[in-house]
Length: 65
Image 1 (cartoon, rainbow, N blue to C red):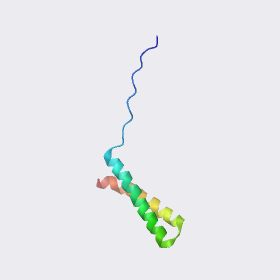
Image 2 (cartoon, rainbow, N blue to C red):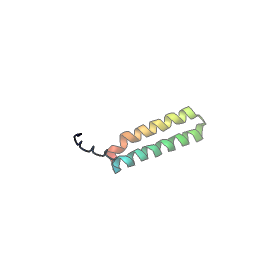
Image 3 (tube, rainbow, N blue to C red):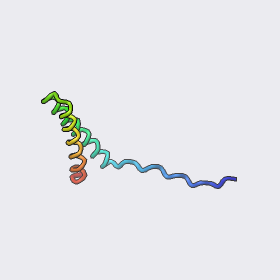
Image 4 (cartoon, rainbow, N blue to C red):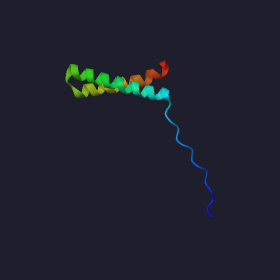
């Protein structure tokens, strides 16, 4: 007869605070990328701007919220 195993706990959910921070970082990256592309028509520069804005938002927003 097999021994009963303890049920595994459910994985922790992402907190609302971090969900909002990640959403704001994605929005900031999209805005920066789209505005850069609209101004310069240079997709590598817009990608770099989007990544930079997203990274800056991920670093700065946890301190503010």
